[in-house]
Image 1 (cartoon, rainbow, N blue to C red):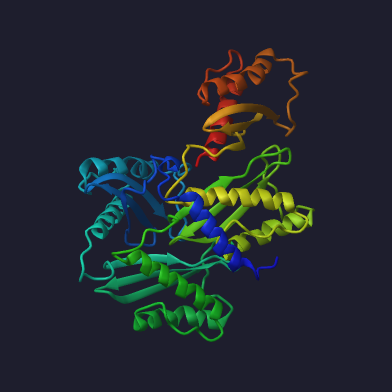
Image 2: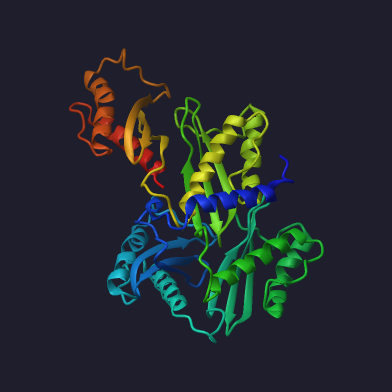
Length: 450
């Protein structure tokens, strides 16, 4: 891959993206359930601990709280996915507390039983967002507290900084580094001495400088740059008055349209309005993830390896195609475009992306179902179903002998389209298959969600 034109690409693409996402006066194009331009929105962050931190996006209208969005981030600065999170009290806190804050017009609400720590983090984040709304001239620049920031990722990983602030002074810095596998580096055994020394000595340099502006550490320039970026991002979180970003912090998952060759997914992580990490996956026509450690077509392997760094470097989905992997490149680009649109503060109208989305049900001893759902203007216009048996073969319903399963295969697509929903009645005698088809359609709709 050649990156020499990426900065130019980035500038042009961001102008284009901004134009698409927020056109002054074009209120008809704005989803009213998002955060409209005629409201005032503030962002606050809780203190960070070894268990992570919380973020609150608070929208005010006529000095009243009208909307609260909550997010929680793990120790490694990765947003928790509450659609699959297994600890129910934390899921409940994330789901229930936003409405409680709106009803209370503040943070005087009961914590969620079993999720006291998460509840307190959310309360503190909301309090700080409201403090930002009331900020006055002459007050401190930063909140007192401990704030976590992270750097962009590359093929060696990324840096994390926990910055403690008191009376606008940095009083303590803790540095961490995450490797390319997503695991914390152990500097007690790390073989590169300059990196170990930088990890030990740089925190005090940041404290003495009271900023991220320090000299690079000899022999560990790459690590120093990551730490400086992480400290800068932590300080942005700590600011009482901060500009509203174009992209909201978090991790966003989106998929491309599906074809007879499969589809791609992109997991895009945003930190302080910057794309800091992109993870790509590709799936075949049966929704089985491709294993690029074993994949034989080298251009596709190159695309999966090189495109993530191209997206981060360009800060845009507009990057060069990988030679010999045009199809894979286009799918990955579309998935990243959709993920970035999800991250945008001002969203386009509509609940779903237009396109063709594929998903599967859970797998059991009999196999699993696949749904291919076409969406246009928030309406399902077509649904195709497949059933993959326990041996991984697609079931042939022209020769299949169990009539209720054949009826389910043929009749359910029309029911899904008519209802414009996955929630339709099961076919008598084919309850298990019907449930799998409904789950596959539900998952496809979730993939299509903006």
